[in-house]
Image 1 (tube, rainbow, N blue to C red):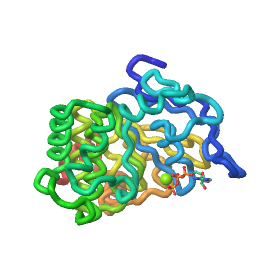
Image 2 (image 1 turned 120 degrees about the vertical axis):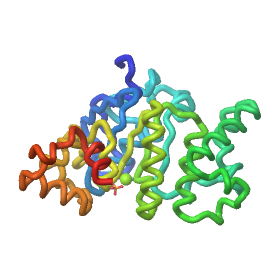
Image 3 (image 1 turned 180 degrees about the vertical axis):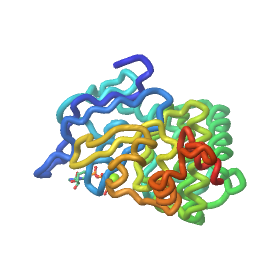
Length: 275
Ligand SMILES: Nc1ncnc2c1ncn2[C@@H]1O[C@H](COP(=O)(O)OP(=O)(O)OP(=O)(O)O)[C@@H](O)[C@H]1O
Ligand SMILES: [Mg+2]
């Protein structure tokens, strides 16, 4: 494993018990420290399977998965991997385990066997980052879907992971909830968090450092978000928002790039201009 690599998948193959076809085949991916990688692809292309490898929820049937030096096929490594690589799934209901918001956030750090002052500090931080401090005493079941999703994120953050893996974690959120979560992710990434996010939404990849498209369990395409917008990569079952459609039309009609409206250096810069 190279220095500064958080997760390294090498020639990974995985077939679910009883499945006829492999979910991943010869899959190779390096997640560098500080990267934000978007995993894209159509339903059944293997994105969640790949995400579960990074968190040692699944172990490759071929090839290897090394997370921060721990080969996940070695026994006893899962605990070490999961405290460093935290996952947030699509459905927050499946991740909420305690009766109140703050108890739920404390659950992960408690399982790490930390001192109560450290647990308290982490809970405060995670609630603050996700904007849930005011709701700390609320019963978890009484939260809205979007608030539950933020609670799931807070629970993952309280582990103080080096890497966050988000498996369609924004798919149940309304546009405002999605924007709020994206803002949190951007802040975390700016502070050095490594992120792997699975999404069907093109706008969500704008701030990623690298996009990977999976097709039938294989890596079909890899590049920057800018490359993705400008190449056929954009046609891989991604939602194309009106903004992105406008972007493409402006490019096509040569409005972007003219002196009067110089081409933005990055999509993030373009978004800031439009915002
Ligand atoms: N528990 C399972 N048992 C058997 N096969 C499975 C299981 N989970 C996934 N698969 C199969 O593995 C392949 C990859 O599934 P995976 O869930 O990784 O895809 P995905 O890209 O996350 O899809 P989606 O966008 O629908 O979430 C699919 O063919 C799927 O049917
Ligand atoms: Mg999936």
